[in-house]
Image 1 (spheres, rainbow, N blue to C red):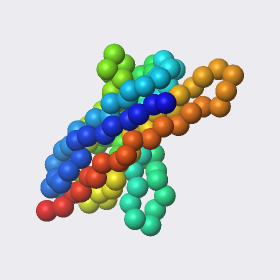
Image 2: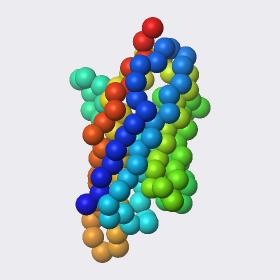
Image 3: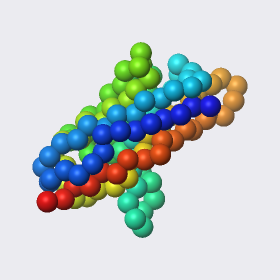
Image 4: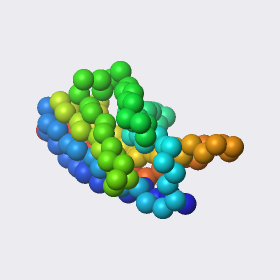
Length: 120
């Protein structure tokens, strides 16, 4: 069992910045990907950014150059630095951990979500 707890969401003005954090706890295998997804009303949850245990990153086209994902393996924590925020970034952001274990299907774990609202 893995638990993920997000923090850092809130209300920010257009052009502003926020930093999201997600702390993982429980039975965490070293080989895992951690990422951020977001969901708005009427749309499916979409990948924002992901980072592997080795540090490789991948971003959605809509956030490239504005968002930066990072992780602290010692703290089992992933971060999402969001800059130049605009109204299209308004969503509930979910932390995800994908545990990769040899000989079995990967396990997905999700945080409860944190609201990010970009508005003046």
